[in-house]
Length: 81
Image (cartoon, rainbow, N blue to C red; front, side, top):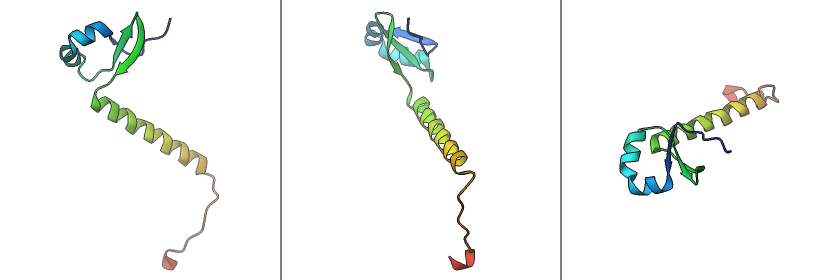
């Protein structure tokens, strides 16, 4: 059985029938859309998706800082710039 990574689930059929009501009910929470009781797709609000992308960018930046934390460094004199 596949894990469902959302607290709100809906079937494909139900989503087709009641799209706007389901979106309103879920508010800003992810929705797992099930097909034959298996997660087929996850539906995210635009705000949730934007937060997720921002978080991923922060993780990538943190990784770069850690990778480059021990150098090599280039000495620069501000007067020469």
